[in-house]
Image 1 (cartoon, helix red, strand yellow):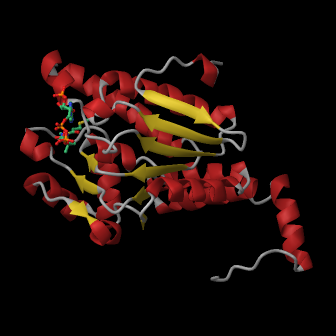
Image 2 (image 1 turned 30 degrees about the horizontal axis):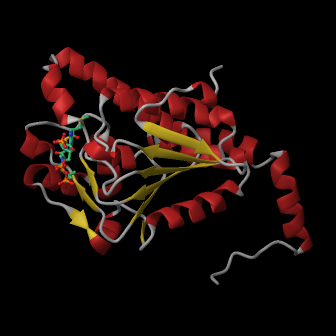
Image 3 (image 1 turned 135 degrees about the horizontal axis):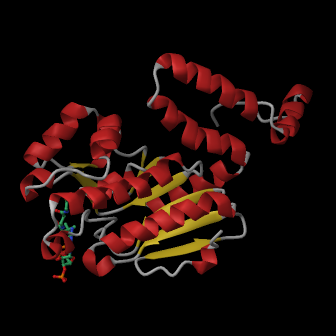
Amino acid sequence: MKKLSDLALENLLLEVDADGIATVTLNRPAKRNALDSTTIEELIEVFSLLPRAGARAVVLRANGDHFCAGLDLVEHYNEGRSAADFMHLCLRWHEAFNKMEYGGVPIFAALKGAVVGGGLELASSAHVRIMDEDTYFGLPEGQRGLFTGGGATIRVAGLIGKARMIDMMLTGRLYSGDEAVSVGLAQYRVKDAEAKAYELARAAARNPPLSNFAICSAISHMQNMSALDASYAESVVAGVVNTQEAARERLAAFAKGTAAKVKPD
Ligand code: 1HE
């Protein structure tokens, strides 16, 4: 198996600290972190390896003022792609984003500036989105004469509902501020999105990895199943997770009355 240290990355930076908190940085700020085909291949490589490299949580962040300007429109223009070429490219985007959503390692996206088009598709593949005060979200595909191809019809519609997504695409409507949180584009809006992302990642990393694996893969898989199949799959996953050795100590503490209670501060 390839190791993280074997990866030669051009548009991403990758670090994993001693606690297993990985930082994946979009590092093409001069192009507003637009997603060219190289970046997509690097996302596939990174998110294929991280779950097997012992990462406990990931913070997905960006260098520069903007999280991500979406599809690299200049590359797309210059390549003069055929329908088949673009379909195959979209399949690579799906490969990358499915690795993220279904990979079983919690991903916390620290957002800033523009989170637009494919940038929103990328952000919506993370498990938790944290925006700063100036982050804004858009789907300018309609205005560019394009359509989403990186999973927005599934993930963005899932977050905000199809009527809002259609409005964003037809009219170029942007969401920002508290409204972006209230419609479901982000779960947190704070001054320092990165600090909050690390705080949340560290909290999640204290859970047993098998619990996080189930939370960050089974729930997504179950959304794709009939209720009958999902209830069966949930039982099987719970059978494995809820009897894991790593839970024994936590359950013992609860039984002895020494575990923290679930109460607001
Ligand atoms: C880019 C891209 C890009 C910037 N592809 N090169 N996405 C969009 O329609 C968003 C397009 N971008 C913008 O609207 C703006 O760039 C931003 C609001 C994000 C940032 O504005 P600003 O003033 O900070 O930067 P800029 O001057 O517009 O751009 C700086 C450089 O980044 C410039 O390159 P330069 O060589 O002239 O310096 C831009 O060309 C470059 N750049 N955005 C390529 N997107 C799977 S289907 C998904 C479909 C979509 O994602 S559609 C949405 C596309």
